[in-house]
Image 1: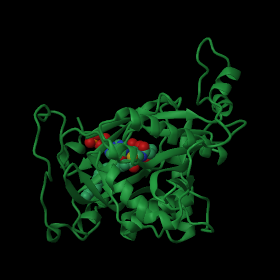
Image 2: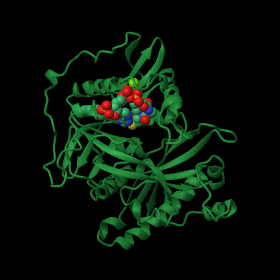
Image 3: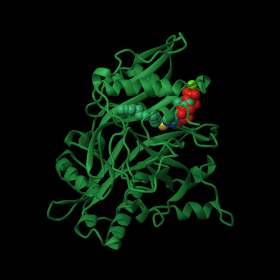
Image 4: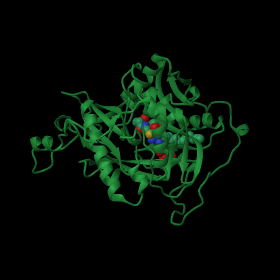
Length: 398
Ligand code: YNC
Ligand code: MG
């Protein structure tokens, strides 16, 4: 019944999934066979535009479209609110291409958007030069008109023209066919506010004051040698992360510029801070651990007292403890719990209301102990034009 997705090079549900398959591309094509003409737009009030996100006014148009029309929870209580700083970070990453920031205008109004950035993806032992597709959004008044497949085909065409044939993307809905599925977990930092906006229910037989106390965090971090990441740490963090990610079957492969872009907050940079990264430096000056989180607010759709929730999303982390004794789960569990307890304290200090994490990487080792609770939506991971066996991954969503 997937009228569009059944025509695309993705594994279909009815296909065999019990035995191990050989992993790799589903379809092989040549750039010379890719059309240089945009996919036709059926209605002639619409036209394709390439958005210049280095232009503040155009960036704000994308911000506004997403602000009104992007992803909501099932009960339509909250909607992701991507700031211009967060969009700049997400879409102007190393190697970004203007042609992959695609809009549809009706008259002068931006009414749909889709984007991609280049990225290398490692699937088990294979490294694929691919793309990451995100921010597919159609104005609420234009829903159900089969415009999404047109946007997807157009971004595919523009990616293919660069000789790139694979993509990774995530979504809350089930499509043919997830390579991995995660759950969101939430750790309240400002429980009373989350309760008041309807995000955190009070468990039966409990009281708000008890819940608020239960989720209080200490004022000070406890890991010796913990400090903000600086430019001088880039090489050590890159090396540590690269070794740590080998634990997982689906990961990005970052070069130095990408580590810098995704992890290092530049002091004095214009706009709001997007990413917070911390390292642990031991007595000998060695970087033994790091963790990071980014800020993504959600609007409270029927807001009264509060108009938004400030959420920190756990991003990448690594620790030598997982590497020196890879089979010692309990040592790793202890270390990750200490690091994440400190991450919560730092997020609270930076005024976050909630700390979110997915059930990926080694997160199951600390979620419960750090008082995260499961959310109701799942997050499915998809690979375009690549068949792979089911995966436990380490790719964080932005
Ligand atoms: C979705 N999220 O199944 P079938 S995530 C992919 N991802 O096709 P219409 C989706 N496909 O079932 P509407 C999708 N949602 O007939 C729907 N679809 O085969 C499929 N929401 O199109 C759907 N953003 O235009 C169906 O649907 C077909 O008007 C129906 O628009 C959908 O960014 C949407 O959740 C999601 O703005 C745009 O509801 C709209 O409902 C909306 O009639 C709120 O479309 C915001 C929202 C999605 C966030 C994301 C990742 C997108 C990945 C897209 C796939 C990329 C593939 C790789 C391409 C590069 C290849 C290379 C190389
Ligand atoms: Mg539509």
